[in-house]
Image (cartoon, rainbow, N blue to C red; front, top):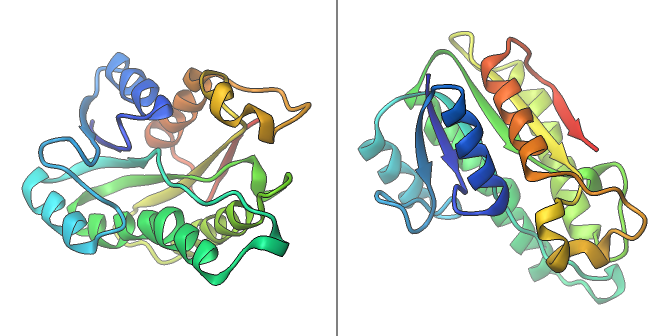
Length: 199
């Protein structure tokens, strides 16, 4: 299986590259700094990447950001930043990756626990995650050629607690390896329209 992992330089991305490699897959690890590089917020970059990188059996997204801000302090720009990056960015991968995905292939996106369990300042992230999960359900009914789509929804990752742990008081973190395993399950499985919860 030829697998594209976008966001491969991040904590979850690195673990996901390793997990697919351990399965014996051919992995293309992509990020803004890879060659070719990809910026999911830039449609031109996404199109150019796929034109250079060829076809895949699975396309996996392990990235996407959204501002953490109280609703009372949030503005249109905060929401637009999250929508443009994590939501539209991953949708860009589906829209422009579709012609380069093999029959019976799969997309796997990433959201997070904040969809169902918001925390302080997560209003933008929770909104964006919810949109991606709705997109997953809807897109699964439209995708041609037996192509599947799922989403992985992890809790805070142990390896990133120094950065994000304060936002998740009392929450049980998960390992990046556990999240990576969910991506492998999605790509190597038969299910579609699923939210694989790692929490």
